Length: 358
Image (cartoon, rainbow, N blue to C red; front, side, top):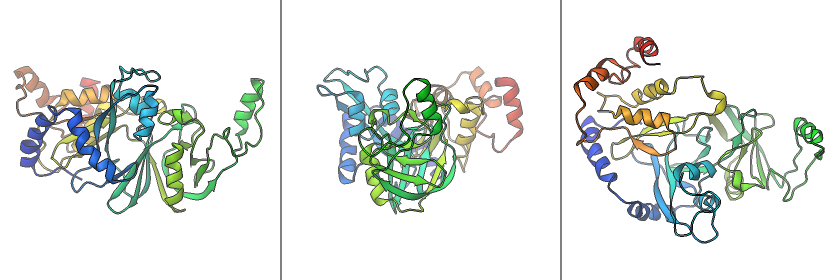
């Protein structure tokens, strides 16, 4: 979805942004609690306007809980909880500590059909029925075993699957003096868990796990892992032949229903580092969000979002009471890196940017 009217975007949107920054998490939590309670786990109503779903809220750590226990209960994986709560111990958070649940998402820039997997985000989206989108944390292939990008489909669904370790894994285990079996039967030692959905990509599956603490990080040999309760739910409902679109979008932007332009950024996958310039990529994506005269963009905020990716939704619009830029800063914006977001209309700017700013 492109931006709403310019007046709404700059006026109402920026005003609401200023108010939003003053709201406390408990107020947000109360509003979102009604939405969460009205739908099953991971389900969200598609917004009437904009591409933002969910909301950020907080919960209090109880005795004996880990950050991962809390994340699993609230449908957030390892990296999501760690990035949202960098000062909180993952394994021994102090009871009574208030922790953030980063349950607000920008829908991926991809057709809203079937399953969409965003690798950098470590998250799966399922457009299960009209007006509803589901989203769940996942694990993907670790460095050296990257999950491939591409469009495929679900094929066979298997309950209580047997697992055949690949030859490379058996050879590595044998070299360590720990020979691996040719076949692992169903049970607590089976890394596929109790449910598996095979894909048209040979040797790749969406499946459960016997190590749920690893959900939300790069931990597999290429397959897509889910919490046992999440894959069981999908297993029961996803028809064979469902499209699966595996994409990699570390930087996303979207308009909210209130006319605020948000950005959400995640760490790039190791294998993609150096394949594109993150700032230029972000500029191009932001430019594509406008179909009218661009609104005032907080370029410093944009750069920070790209250079310090943590999955938070951050507004890119300047607020009304923002101090005016200095004369030198205005000149830099007029002819520099962030020149009115016109890079898509003026391709020649790319060569200038590469020479003067990289």
